[in-house]
Length: 339
Image (cartoon, rainbow, N blue to C red; front, side, top):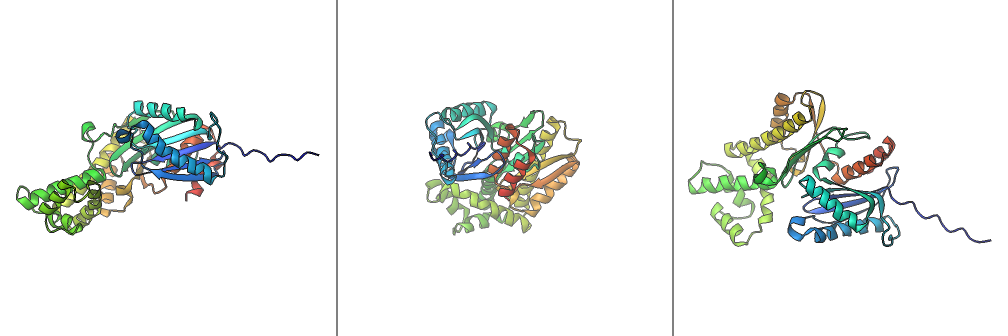
């Protein structure tokens, strides 16, 4: 009698991808919510590297996920999963989401492909249960963004292109603002602030003049200015008026984004979740958190505010399961995997 060959493993239901500026996470997920494999690679920056080079970075995470799932490498034209659910930084406009969906679809990773801005991953990760999302999320990490979604598919969103589209804040903006006020305090154009001493001291320098020179001439990499954000919050917490004003302005921006998104979705007068994510909003800065809570209590008193600490790839996976009509148990199993 012949030997029955082993059953071919079922194709994963979802290939979830969350790609930020600094790292990319990928996960292959079964229809019941089981995580079969995961992978990680570098940041997704198509505006700097070009789309195809940026997708090559995603591909490394996808291949690693397939390898950790012990899945055979699919042949040409055979997808890794039924659905690619990709939440991507720098997919800021709907037209960019469509173009990236086409480019990822051309790679053949999934039988179908959906692309979202990465803020949607925070929104979905913060909402319990299955079914389409209903609520608003604000992310304040390197930059700042806000999205909202209703079960009927309507969304509220902002271009999130920086000063060009009216944005203010995020880690990059906070660091730049702190440097601006500190420089003016030292040279006499502005009022006094402890930032003038604290910022250069963080890098072992004696003055703002030395810090400005080091950044300008490249002795200190510009990317390291993000290290100044915790310094800003510490100086503010110690009572410095200038630093406190910066922190308060950031809180007011979060409140403005959330309130406008809620209003656009007709949720301002209803009980609705407002999810906060990103490094600045998950760090537990008391002064920032308290002002956000007070501002939303005034402008959106029925909003239910919570912080989302779950990894954004969870949100990408849940969006993929949503698209496939997976049962609530699958959502719960996936969420349990990511704690």
